[in-house]
Length: 149
Image (cartoon, rainbow, N blue to C red):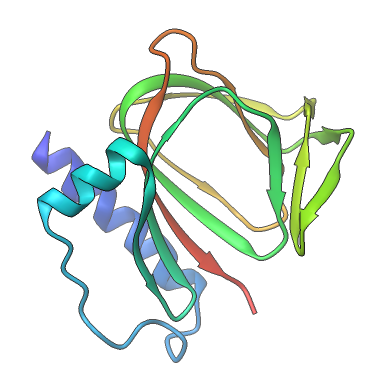
């Protein structure tokens, strides 16, 4: 499992590095210890925030759809199971903050089965939705987010 996590982390960082301008990427090393990441996973929270790079440890439950105009996601699934929808058309969208759109759900789109070990990328301006987490109740994941300019 450690190898799988290491590969998922390497893949997400490779995708992220390819997607951003090297001049904007954080210029310092961040080391986050096990206790802090475990606590963040338990209650949800940011573990890194630097130069547009945000890493969140979180636990998702079924909720409405969303779209972020400038946020690119890489989700690394650590436990649980979910049906996750990307693309399609938001149902009854509303802007809840600048560049942040929430909706009741998505019409159309592509369904993905997310389980432990899966990595999925969601580019900015892509509707996405944790449609069903009922099999395990929630999904533990790391979100590596980068904001477009």
